Image 1 (cartoon, rainbow, N blue to C red):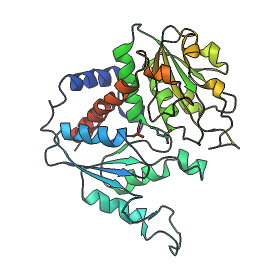
Image 2: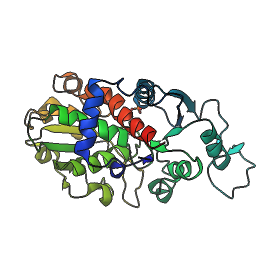
Image 3: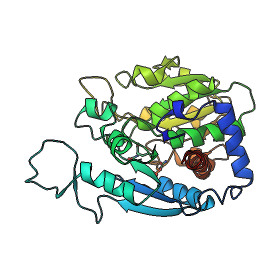
Image 4: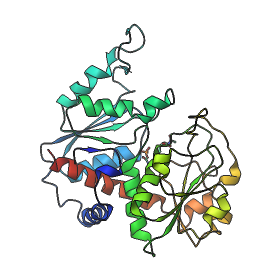
Length: 317
Ligand code: AN0
Ligand code: CP
């Protein structure tokens, strides 16, 4: 595997999950693989889990790790070619990316949707420049349209907790005060479809995700109806995808917050969220603190999904 930006890069999911569970049983089994290899993690946006879990995974594999917060201590980067650079940015991405490639063997990139241009976001303009110009294997640590390391960790978590071959998994929109990208729900939908679960998406009208991510999922606008009989409830806010409202907040309706009353509609479902989460906007205190909450096991599995991805990228060197 040379790149990891979507479910298509990982091959058969049953094989990937099996490999993940093996790595989880002995996370130091491949500690020779990354010897004298350097991971560079580039952050254009904030992170707690991705930064820590990916560094831990790299250390499990014996790698050296360099982390750069682009917005904190590096030159501000121009990303547009052809710009007369007489403004804020002393350096262009087109030099910075190949320079970064000189100092490492593998590059991870976090670069959220900017909501300035839907075309640029959905063409993964920043991530693709790393793929094109770094000369290194590149993986997404949440880019504009996807967060595959998160979706992989979520898949592992569901596989560990499911009691039915084909559980009912419900992705529900929930309210949030700021406009968030569609990356997490896009990837979650892509991976749930690929896993072949009974997969339902529920959100207020206007929050339809891009059809290529929705795939064959059932879309139900009535949240209560969608939640009935669910085995897993995955809550997440996202901003509108559809034109002309791309990147906009259309609703902050707290009737969509996941509460114990909402969870009572399910088949004693587990609650999931990628974190960070705003309590009592997305989910009530009692639900996230309940023994059916998987938010910490999901975060723990981020180390495992990152280790499988780094292992496969190292094997391609
Ligand atoms: C980000 C998002 O919704 O994409 C990161 C989630 C992992 N969340 C926030 O910006 C709060
Ligand atoms: N879930 C996740 O990616 O968290 P961070 O934004 O803290 O990395």
